[in-house]
Length: 140
Image (cartoon, rainbow, N blue to C red; front, side):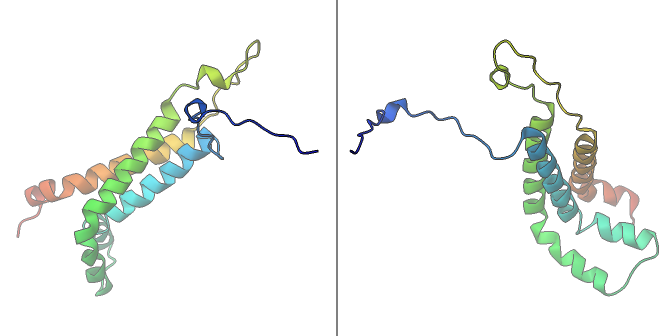
């Protein structure tokens, strides 16, 4: 015998999306994306300046400056990842995450993730501010 299963009307479909990874893991991945985006955003100006200041130089450094036209894209990606990462690290767990008559587990410590997000945010801020601040210190 074949049983017939009735389908629910289309307006009764739940829109809850279950993520395959935990919130703390998402925050860590977004922090990594933010840091990588921040490094990409700073490749045109801050990283070459840092290399030159410690004595590293060469013709290859001119190739790094070729990424300057892509800096706004790197900044946008970094800001999106950092914003989402800060959201997932600092948001309160929902009441639905705890079952009734049970104790909610304390949130996991995300110290490394918070440090990575802060470092990425500082690097993005430096990459954004560099074109405006550098002329004050560098004479041409």
